Length: 225
Image (cartoon, rainbow, N blue to C red; front, side, top):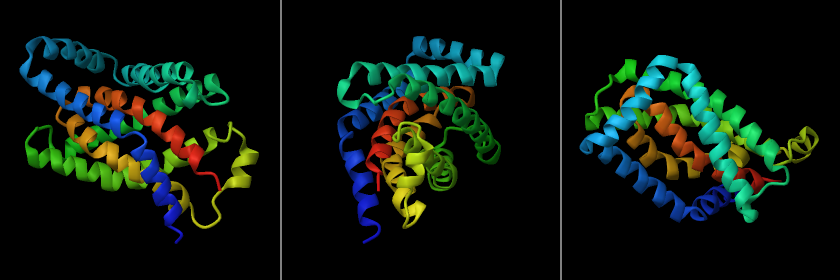
């Protein structure tokens, strides 16, 4: 019974975003196919790749400010139904949080490249996706996301966080509602991400995370005790 509410929160959050999720999956697939079969797209993305090679972590920070701050911020300000009580504070917090996670993810992508190589064979992509989703995401990304967006959804109030903090297990009540939709959205998207060259992966991942930020806000708001 303890798992009922978290499962419902995760499922309802994922179900509420079925259409955008399929749009995201379709976009990721089209982006991969375009990169490998349309020379002009590969040339354009080659510029991004060169930019990443030249500026390293600074490029990651700029990318995450765009994808985790500005892009979701446009939706938060433009769509009243999902607008938080403190939209500008939320946008700023998401941008900073996105930069930190972006740097961690970039390091993890590079570590995966050391472990499994930089090839795009099916076996390599599957292995990277499995390690990403069932090790990295389970142990790092989902717990950190869950705590951060729980705090954001309580208007950045540490007092409210203390009052509403789960009393029957952080994993079952806080992490699982984040992890379930993460798998629903993330497995196809991260598989597509690993199909790109290493220096493009963090930017493709940033584009995906723009949507994920909006979904996490809903999950955080629904996780009240």
